[in-house]
Amino acid sequence: MLQLYLSLLDTQAEKDKFITLYESYRDLMFYVAGRYLGSDADKEIAVDGALHVLLGVLDKIDDPQSAKTKNLVCLIVKHKCIDLLRRKGGTVEEDWEAIAEQAESGTDPVQGSMENSLTDAILSMSETGREFLILRYYHGYSTAEIADLLGVGRDAARKRLERAKAELKGILEADR
Amino acid sequence: MSKKETAVELTAAGKLYTFSDLALACEAAAAAATDLPDILPAASVSEEFAAGVRRMHSAYRRKLLRAKILHTAAGIALALLFTFSAVITTNANAREAFLTWWTATVPGSTAYWFESDAGKASGRYGLGWIPEGMTITQQTESEDFGSTVFEGGGHLLVFEYFLGEGSGAYQVFGASQGVPAEIGGLAGRLYAEDGRVNLIWADETKGVVFTISSDLDAQTVLRAAESVREGGPEGE
Image 1: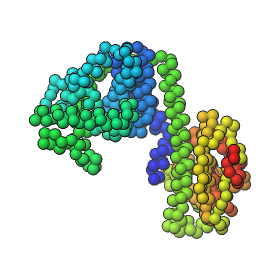
Image 2 (image 1 turned 90 degrees about the horizontal axis):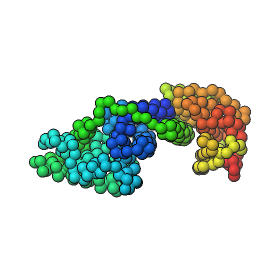
Image 3 (image 1 turned 30 degrees about the horizontal axis):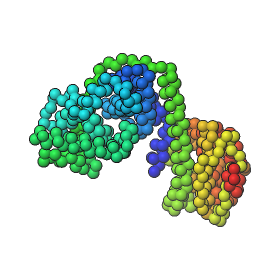
Image 4 (image 1 turned 90 degrees about the vertical axis):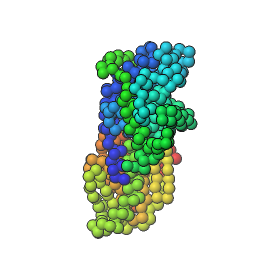
């Protein structure tokens, strides 16, 4: 109990962590946003949204400069871009159309190295399915936390995770 | 390995895959699927964006501070409820400290308790003065505890009191050892740390412990403490 309160009183840590995240990934966040969005203003909106999401999960980030955190930052920015594109409706950029098609068809550029292993099966999944599995198993987020991170409903997140597992199962069984 | 790590998450092609199997594979997949260049172009951000980030950071700090003040207050309450009975019954020195304050310092916290010949304390207490612009946003009353949260002007103030039965105890968590303070002729202790002020004092004759936790300055907190009156909070 004492340790719990002591940790809550450690005021400087969260502030330092957020500053480290921002300074480490500012360029990366804009780079990722630039893959999906054309205008600088849109990129700023997406990065701003991603920073807000990161604030909410600050306590779950152990090492701001780890590969794991970098992966999380990329995923969050990407989904903020998707949110923005969805809200804009007809003004979807060309890049996003290609990515959306790729996600639907279940193919992506890393498919070439297919081997009979769990990792390769995950790599051959659709991008959307793979990301859900990565958030669930690599980052350890619950379905509810994934829903909050990606800005989707909890039922939708649960269904997408189930679909991702079914997709993975299908790939593993097809490669048998 | 934990139960979660060994739980079977997927069955496919006659094989069982645990959470841990999937975690390792997903980690490798995340690394392999990353196609970011080693050198990224420097992002140029508008002044509006930079200002927005600064505002967000500032807002987050306020939110964090609010949470910590509330947790400190909750910590004091829990310590009052649980620490006293545990310590007083197991510590001989504590039992001998009847009618006096007893203090124990352990890394990161200081515990205080007292025994008096007062009977069961009763009554309700409130602040007769609060800083301008603040209003009550949360209030809890029970048989032996009262808590009122005041907010306004971007600040927070939590006033709490604990009614003992001839005794009182509290525990302060934090590095600061505090300084003595006097509130209406009663002895107390003031802790100022990381932009927060915690003031704790007791009326031993009545068996009541009072606390105020706030992000306001010490003088304002002391003024609010001086205004404590029996009968309920400001605004009633």
